[in-house]
View 1 (tube, rainbow, N blue to C red):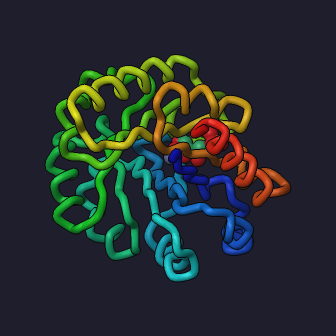
View 2 (view 1 turned 180 degrees about the horizontal axis):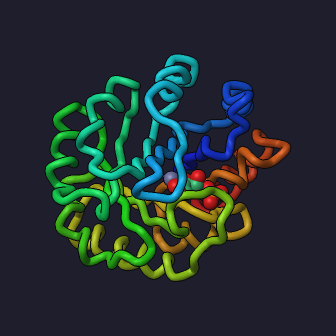
Length: 221
Ligand code: DX5
Ligand code: ZN
């Protein structure tokens, strides 16, 4: 079954918990948490305090996407805040493997992400160490951008590599996903779908999540 990971970056932060409450009892299991430092990407979002504040009120898997330089510096703090997975960027560390090993040693899941211009081949040696690979289908930094079609080839390539090598790493996609284009990313081989503006920027948050699940179910038949 494909999993949905709504990105809280598109929430109205003046009523964050209200937006999160609208996702309850929909079958949702995870939320996507975008952390940006203004260096790795040209935007700054939020970090530990907000994650910690929403942790106990939301029984979801906290899928945390670290768009920060040298993420190894802050792994302990994100673990302490209650993240269930930390996904780092290949381009953000001198030694991504060292950071991945540190994340795993903390007892949570690790993920590796790559920007649209980074070739898939570069991250292949890391796939045996991670629980998920996050394919960026927009330039990281902002919600609400258009899906880059080229990312479908990356997903297909990774699906083949992961299956042929019998790895357990999930494929997640992030950026520009909407109910209108989600079928093709599932067909390309994605296991987890991040969607921000198409869920939290919409009037009917619950209705949008239900639409995604309807599509996931039609695809599993
Ligand atoms: C972009 C973030 C995404 C973003 C997705 O850098 O990593 O997770 O929130 O938002 P949409 O779905 O609106 O493209
Ligand atoms: Zn993200």
